[in-house]
Amino acid sequence: MQGATFSMRARPADCCSAAAGPASARMHGAPFPMRARQLRCSAAAGPQEPTAAFLPGTHGRAKAVDNGVPRLDQEADFRYRRADMSQLHAYTARWRFGRNIVRGEAGMNLAEAALLVAAEDDAIASHSTVAFPVEAFLGRIQTLADEFEQQRLWPMAEETARAGSVWAVQPAAQLCARPPGRVVGVVTGRGRVRGDSGGGGGGGGTSVGGGGGGGGGGGRARGALDPCSVLSALNDFLFVGQRISAAPFGRSNLPPNSVLDHPGVWEDARWGYLNETLIRRRGHPAAVAILYAEVMRRLLSKGAVDFAVAIDTAGFSGLPRPVVLKGFSRDMLMRGPPAQSLSASRGESEGVSSGEPPLMALNTCTSDALAELLRHLKRSYWPLPWDTSVDACVDGGSGSHGGFRPAAKAATGDSMGAQLRAVSQVANWRLERGIWTSPGAGDIRRCRAACERLVLLGGEGAEAERRDLAVILLHQGELSRAAAELDAYMGSAHYKSAADPMDRTLCRTMAGLLGGVESLERAVPVSLEVLLAGPTPEEARFDEAKMPLTW
Image (cartoon, rainbow, N blue to C red):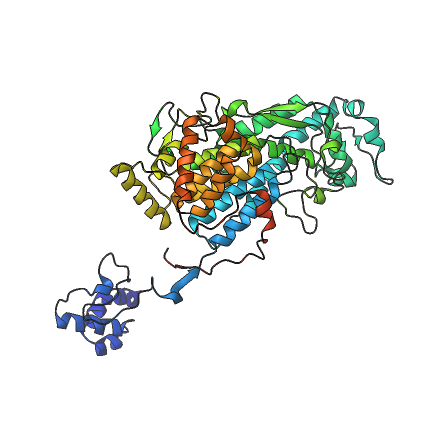
């Protein structure tokens, strides 16, 4: 103990001896003799000015030191750059979006389409080398459906079994239509329902259809539950248990009868992304409606319920209200034969993603919910002034066309204010550098993407969206594409009959401006046919752009 105490007291002296010279440092066992030598030499040379390579704020990116010796600029060196995968990721998300909505309203997957919207915008803004995890967020929705079945439907099925009403209500055809050699579920002495082995987990389960719930005939037995009771339980599970809520402002946060320099100051784009709704538990009423419909669709697909619902959005002013579709059963809405096992119902079969069962029910939610999300993103990213008195949401309009007149006037000669132009330039510079905390001045790239997706989704019924896309392309400098979209709009029925006279005048002025451009290449308007006729993501080729590592 005395030796240990002596060594502890001797350490300050050892440190002083180490600073005295290299010989004494090695003698006393100092761990850094070379560092001590460097410190001593610097002290002998006297105070020096810091070199440019280590000036505060340069972070080692100075091109030369103070003595004229060149220093490597890692920002400009091609060897220190990474591949830019944003074009491929954005094209893949757009291609999958087109493949989704081309199946029609009954066949499209609204939740996947909404997540693909977020995937494309993420690729545009972040330039990430990693693709947006669409399947992971679909897996979160599947988890919500599984938890609701286990926590709410199974106890409700047990109560129904104890009341002795399961076999009285269940159709006899469903009881008899079973493969031979399988045991039909029976009520045990304790009131628990024991399902067959193919119904999802064998006889150890405590609900109708076994422990797994949702497979084979056992899932159909749960169809005896009252639809109103199931929907009430689902509302309580999502809106109380999971604390999912809609945006407090409802459909739009823009003040009425106003001309706003930047609508993005009022509209938050995060409300319009389904992944943000799953993360933050709050979202646009349309996003909550899509989430609700997807949970019900997955419950129907796995056999947990035997009824379908339509979503009454009521103008997207609050939480969605489900309406039972009478006369439609699970077998009528399935795309193929019912799932035969629990593993198949959960998508664990070969070649199927775990985020979605292989056999899904048809969509019963209106695609207007997806269009409403795209309109919200369009307003949030609109880079020019917005007139809320045009096509206002409060007056029953779509709230999507208030930006055309200010944008068209700016494109045809009306000058922007100095303050507005400065804010727009600063916002554009920040977004180009990957700084997402924009001051609400919009993002013309993601605004264009929202307009294009609205055109793809609406088809012939979205002529006004094509007009707005044309003016955005004009501001981007895509003159040939702007001319193609404007020509397609001016040949539509909306331009000839429903368009406002002022809007027609602005369209003719824009057409004259584009017509005076010489050697304008001919482009093809945006359409689903053109998108799907293009190369697949595996066949697509893009410029091998490189970005700095510190971007």
